Length: 466
Ligand code: SF4
Image (tube, rainbow, N blue to C red; front, side, top):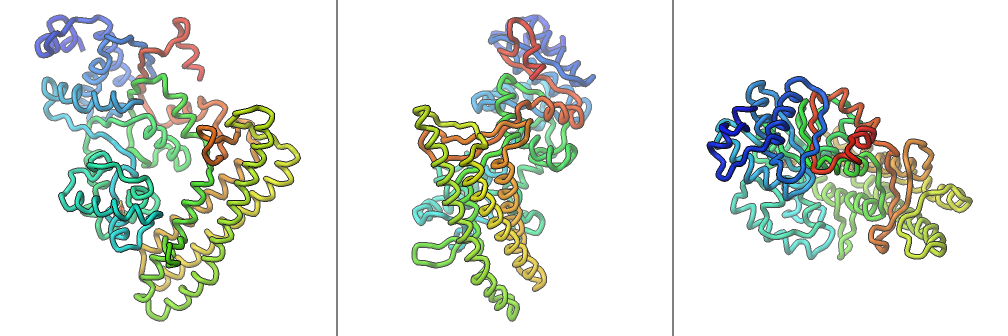
């Protein structure tokens, strides 16, 4: 990379105020060597090294020469914006006009036109009537033709309740079967991503992708398209972010949102959520509609109601269990799970009942979806019902696992975020090393991890050990 970083190289000729920095030139050559030969390189580069250019130039040269995609991950939005709006345009201008770059965002950052249309027709998943006021503003935004259809492009901050009811979701998405697939913002972004030399992501998205691949297989397509070369900036955050994504969380709010998504009673007693939308579509099925309608009212609704009651009982019991312990240590907001007598005789049976109610709801949904598929219509509704059934089953599995709390490779605890909010059950792997090692061995050929602070007492031993 000396043609770029040397005292009379490309940067000296094009970057106003450029000062030759041997550390920067050395880092760039290390990055290029790692990408070309494979392996893992850790680099501690203090402020002022100019490290973003020291990895961008070699990454761009490597990607253009080999046609292999390189992923660059950062922890903070500030750095991501600096890369996307300043450093990468500079590299493109002076070095590689043909460079194609995509800033990758998670599914839930994009508007789903299909769910948005449901919301407009009054049959979406809106939880609060107030959120419907904001829907009018979203409508104006859509009518004006947003470029990428993402949350950051919206001129106002929608309530989380509104956005979560109209954003794209990987499990409920209809993909090619969606009537709006050709106009879909998310798939437009994904096509751009497939076609890019460089993908810029954040650590949360990177490890969400790793977590999905860990379940589906390392070579599968998850959040990101397949890649073999990775540069992680601000790498000192990796352990925390990875631990977060490789663990499990279960909150009362999440449980209520799931059940409310399936069946919701609106203010005037009308049926909302998935069941409500399904009921309005059923007349198109003709004679098959009657038995499906009966099943919704006689089985699905009471079972969801029962699961909601059991969820209240279970989380109240958890709060009480934590409250008893709070008395001993004032102000504590996280409690390690201990299988004491109360846990075994009260929490475990309440969890069993809730888990079995969730499985019953999932079975009911699956049964309805089979009937919808047999009737040969409403495939979009069948697809959504199956995705919700899978979510309910997965929630039951996570609940069983968290309450049993008996995996020696994980830690289990209860917490109240901020000390006041509703309680949630959590787990995290004791060590992320084995998980990451398996990912690195099987899916990645080269990794560069850099940061201003990676060593402890001048050694990389700690971070390599973790
Ligand atoms: S393809 Fe998926 S994300 Fe796109 S509009 Fe359709 S359902 Fe929504």
